[in-house]
Amino acid sequence: MYNEKVMEAFKNPQNVGEVENYDGLGKVGNAACGDIMQITIKVENDVITDAKFKTFGCAAAIATSSTATQMVIGMTLDEALKLTNKQVVEYLEGLPPQKLHCSVLAEEAIKAAIEDYRNKKAGIHAKDKEPEYV
Image 1 (cartoon, rainbow, N blue to C red):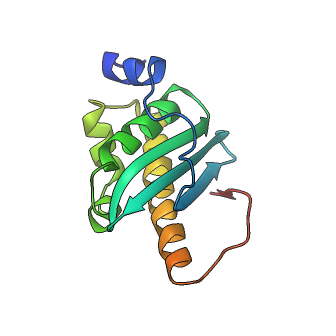
Image 2: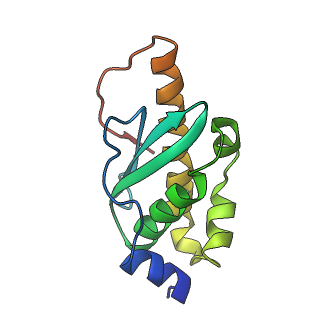
């Protein structure tokens, strides 16, 4: 069902955990499939210097979370906002059609973490909240 690259990312995920003293937090989830992702980022001079994830979900959810965090480290915030689920899927050399939603969640979690960072920087503090289910 999964190709070798997806299985490698699932079996040996990178950036697992939570960034210490993170600057931005993105939580997303999908109640229909049960996947929940949390991505935290560290930002210096508008560049993402670290990103980590915690994901409860299938192999594709873990693989896309790992891949997305790897891809955004070193990017500016604006560059990271342009990261698409299609780019994550291409990096992984494909996902089964029924698992493409996992790459969408990874994209959304990155964008939510950046939004959280920018809101905090602007003095807008969101209350701790549960993941927003799609």
